[in-house]
Image 1 (spheres, rainbow, N blue to C red):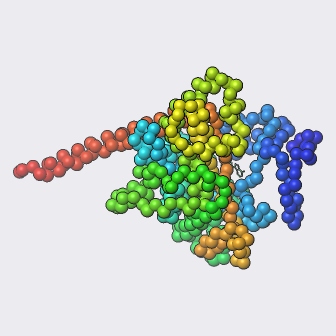
Image 2 (cartoon, rainbow, N blue to C red):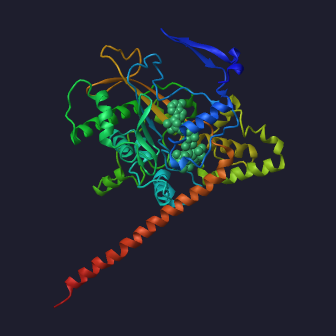
Image 3 (spheres, protein in one colour):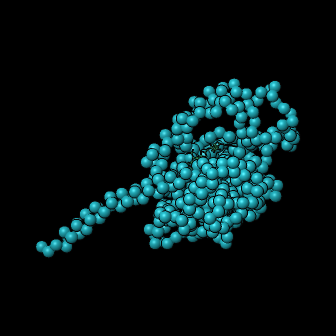
Amino acid sequence: MDEEKIDENEWGYHGEGNKSLVVAHAQEVVQLPLDFVKQLCLKVQSERPESRCDKDLDTLSGYALCLPNLARLQTYHFAEHRPILCVEIKPKCGFIPFSSDVTHEMKHKVCRYCMHQHLKVATGKWKQISKYCPLDLYSGNKQRMHFALKSLLQEAQNNLKIFKNGELIYGCTDARGPVADRRELARHLKPFFFPSNGLAGGPNCTRAVIRELVRVITRVLLSGSDKGRVGALRLGPGPQGPRVCEASPFSRTLRRQGKNSPECSGLPKGCLLYKTLQVQMLDLLDIEGLYPLYRRVERYLEEFPEERKTLQIDGPYDEAFYQKLLDLSTEDDGTVAFALTKVQQYRVAMTAKDCSIMIALSPCLQDTRSDQRPIVPSSRSRFTFSVSVLDLDLKPYESIPHQYKLDGKIVNYYSKTLHAKDAAVMPTRFKESEDCTLVLHKV
Ligand SMILES: O=P(O)(O)O[C@@H]1[C@@H](OP(=O)(O)O)[C@H](OP(=O)(O)O)[C@H](O)[C@H](OP(=O)(O)O)[C@H]1OP(=O)(O)O
Ligand SMILES: Nc1ncnc2c1ncn2[C@@H]1O[C@H](COP(=O)(O)OP(=O)(O)OP(=O)(O)O)[C@@H](O)[C@H]1O
């Protein structure tokens, strides 16, 4: 920061430990010298993935967000000398739309993530289709959750990153490939999960280590107390819409085995996944039902542009804004007020559909008690952990038309791909039946 401009009044006492005194900046946003920003840009340029380099850092504003490093443990700030593992998951939308405004039948069967995969591969964003399905992760069923996490480990895309002591050791920077392979990952993880035994290397070791990681992450994701205000956003007695996505390889395998649908355990109410899903489900109408309401607000704003502030389109996202989110009625009375409430709820839901969960784990000593801090056990180890949510800046009002177009594109492309696949299978079927006919001919 520019020394001359640093003002002590913008800083406040935060706390202190044995060695450090911690002060926090009054704003979130901090001011930076322009030269520093320019130099920083040059320094990090070579490390940026090619696919992101079309975007330049804003070197002229001189402002930046100052955030805690969530790859570090958030419950135990002064234990930084202990090794820290951090798993970042971007789970995406965990439910299938239940709105009656949905016109594409496919959207009631296959989740958006699984459909979107086909478009992403076709456009070269990723190389191959992932077996990950958010509905498996959000199912609360351990078997399904393990499958979802293993699928993320196979094909991380931008949905999984793993950091060791703050440094990225596993994940994808872009379609050109992963940062490391599973064997290398297991080598990094082994001291965390098998600290004192000489587990031999090789594929069995890799499998054992990955299994431990998957189990620990599942336990953490299912943990949590039922505190916090998100409880107020509960959408009724239980989850709505289908609980299984027809495209998930997990449910497809079960169907092939004659089991209709996998067991749905449901998520414990206090856990972060449950809370995230509740917020995502504020998207009550789906983009198809929402878009005409957005148009209504737009028409109103065209006529009364000065109202933009009163309607809190660009914030402030304060108590009054929060209170409006609680009105879950879907009965349209034709007013701008109704349309605006649904638009704002949609923006909040979209934010929750795109946020990331950071799970930081640090091995703890055998005598650490779980009433001192949250602890998750693995077979041979115990970890103290913290869970944080990242990327919660509200999705802009202006992105709604883009959402509407993208939705149509995703569904149409998916339907077209399925159709093409069916058509490709058909001639084979005819061929098979012709072969059969030949066998049955009289001789
Ligand atoms: O629309 P989606 O589902 O593709 O989500 C976008 C993300 O793509 P993903 O599917 O996760 O690979 C996309 O992620 P990437 O930049 O592709 O890693 C962004 O998070 C984007 O948000 P924003 O527009 O930058 O605020 C996200 O856009 P929003 O739809 O959340 O606005
Ligand atoms: N406070 C933080 N602590 C640790 N890592 C962070 C923090 N904020 C961001 N990151 C890292 O930087 C990445 C990008 O951050 P973020 O998702 O907030 O950017 P974004 O531009 O909003 O991305 P997108 O729009 O693609 O979701 C995250 O995936 C995470 O790995």
